[in-house]
Amino acid sequence: MTAAWGALWQALDWLALLGQFLLLSLLSVGGAITTVPDMHRTLVNQHQWLTDAQFNASIALAQAAPGPNVLFVALLGWHIGLNAAAGLGSAGLSGVSALLGVAVTMLGILLPSTTLTFVASRWCHQNRERRGVRAFKQGLAPVVVALMLATGWILTAAQGSQLRHWPLWLLTGVAALLVWQTRVHLLWLLSAGALLGWFNLI
Image (cartoon, rainbow, N blue to C red):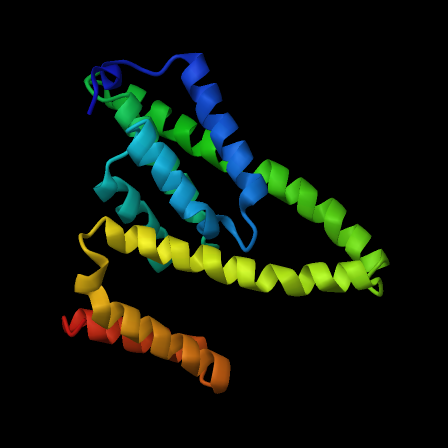
């Protein structure tokens, strides 16, 4: 951690964080989870606002909890706020700073994409028979898949060499193939993965 964590961030720092998430919101094709690689680059590598452990824990906790997967952004904001208030010795200020972090990151990630989705979906529905609209929808599928693969790569990179995790990559490939080629419900595959992890088999 840098010495900047000794006091609450200045207003410009919070605005910079808001601006970062506003930009990421416009890139979140396929959901906020697809922007994880860029979030990691900015929050962990570039600004060191979070540690690798905090970043990965935020995503893991949010994915394990019920609800939309965008909740990991709230946990990232919570950790950023706690880090910003570190060293002040006041639980009250830490709580306020953490809540501010949640508000800033969630507002940033939701506002542009929600507005754009609302406007674009209405337009696309009205023009759904146009060739360009159909081509755009079909072209987004490989983009989303590639972004999800990049997210998985970033999350495993924080744990060391990706080659060391070949059983996880193999399991991911098998699960993707089963979802694509069979009618096995995704929850059964998630449950099987959870059991394998519980018994430390992967």
